[in-house]
Amino acid sequence: MIKTSSLQWLIAAVVLGLFLAAPLILPNNMTQLADLMVFILIALSWDMLGGQMGYNSFGNILFFGVGMYLVASIQVWAGGFTLAVYNAAEGGNLSSFAVDTPTFIASLVIGLAIVAVLNFLLGLIVGSQLLKMRGHYFAIGTLGLGVAAGEFASTMHILGAGSGMNFIQPPRTLELMPLLYFIGLFVVAVFFILLRWLYSTRFGFVMNAIRDNEDKAEAMGLPTAEVKAFAWAIAAFFAAIAGGIYGSAKNFIDPTEVAFSAPTIGVWMLLMTLIGGKGTIWGPIIGAVVFQLFKEFFWTFLFGWQRVALGLLIVIIVVFFPGGVMGGFDRARRALGFGKTGAEANP
Amino acid sequence: MSDGEIMLDVSGVSKNFGGVIANEDISLTVRKGEIVGLIGPNGSGKSTLFGSICGYHPIDKGSIKYRGTETKKMRTAHIARLGMVRTFQQTHVYGEMDCVRNMLISRPVRDGGVRSLLHRPNPDDLTRAEELLEFVGLASKQHLLAGSLSFGQQKLLEFAMALMNEPELLLLDEPTAGINPTLINGLIDRLKQANERFGVTLFVIEHNMRVMMNLAKEIHVLAAGRLIASGKPADIQNNPKVIAAYLGGH
Image (cartoon, rainbow over all chains, first blue to last red; front, side, top):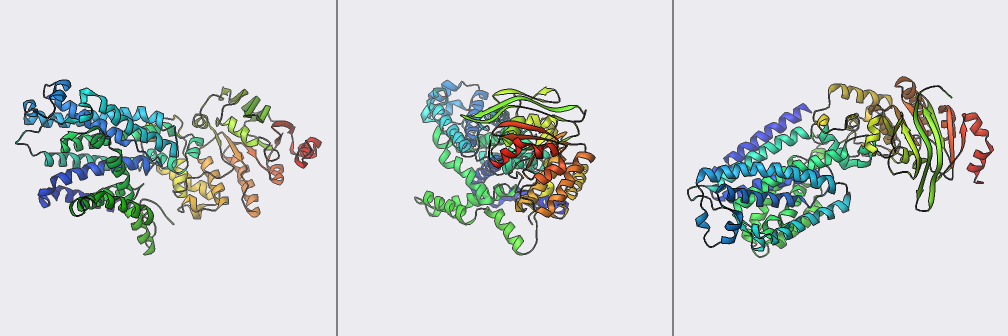
């Protein structure tokens, strides 16, 4: 156990080193790298429920979108403007809402922190109600969350309604993508360390117990309702940060196409987790990297057919690699006779 | 029977499912340190009564007191944290985890708070887990996934998990069902030991009369949702009402 654990930290250190060096290796792909950090965050946060706890949520997009709108709003306020005036101006003269670099960076960072905490609370509230449902009922119930939030945002004139909302323009001298990338990388590192710890505590055990047999967990007096709500709140915390970073990178929020986009981000977070292997801590990370590579490849070389290709990829993974990359590793390891892994003690 | 403190006091409990009367006006007590049996033909309402006691469904009438505290409005997990834990007729284990992990999860969470969960299991817990797996005879299986165990082994694991939870009163729903006959004697022995050594009061549903006669000092008999007899095993065995119920003539 201890050996596997220190090996994993070594791997983590190497991966972190690669990520730190990535901007030097791929200086022209900073947008894609910043997106990758967002993807890792949402995949890890989706896996907390879907993988570790067995609750397949389509609702995490709620926190993603709320985070995005809130960060955008906080940046507008920090510049000394009012939301209504800012969004009424729409497009035309965004340059008149300029902010200086320190204000921009500070409002972005502090904004991300604030929305994380607010979404933690939102996750607790929504989770304590929705997580009373189980199985398919929960999945369908959460599906409604994202759709409802998207429709709601489309009617809010203060948020630009259906035509969406721009992020405050970053100052010309600021390299936004590297900034977002490193913020994202920092949050990924924090999330990874937090999850490593959390999954080794009794809290993590109870999450797994809920996945395997919630009735039993309840019968044994485990505080299942509390654990479920807190787990979702933590997932919401990081999904909101991911949303804030993603919106800032795209510089524009469309209520249904970007913020609360169930068919893209909402499905991708699940897909990435499946690609990598759900219920493992490395799975969502590997899945996000693989997914981003495939996505960029499809968008570049199969443009026009990219969604078809992505759809095919989903089918292939679900049918042929149900355990994802990590599941494949496990099978290979067992086939080679290495026995049990650190993550799951298989016979 | 004995003069121990009343642990469980069920009085006048009725439960209907739609028009089906599952339990009607049932009253019984379980005293500290006893092994009490609950028998009855299939569909006589035994498991329903367990469900009512453990808070799985609201009861229609009556009262259920655990150590003097009314529990009929409490949630399942809350009742379990008071020290009254049940096992299931069908096995309920955490299939994707190994036996040791199953045991570690089963440590009691008395305060029901999340904060008390935010630490790794301590070495004492691991020692205890291994002791109890040894106790039920699963020591050699401890690193196998619980889901890969046979039905009988899962039952044994569930029993060990229940003991790990340090209950004061343990409700066992057919502990020997699905366990091979040669293992049953060993299991009876362990149930008795759990009662004597660990001081766990047992309330047991069981179809196997031989087991019941060996185990229980007092037996309650349900038929068609009603309590038709209570008493010592020997008396129950010769009670004409009980014999009639089992042979189908209500």
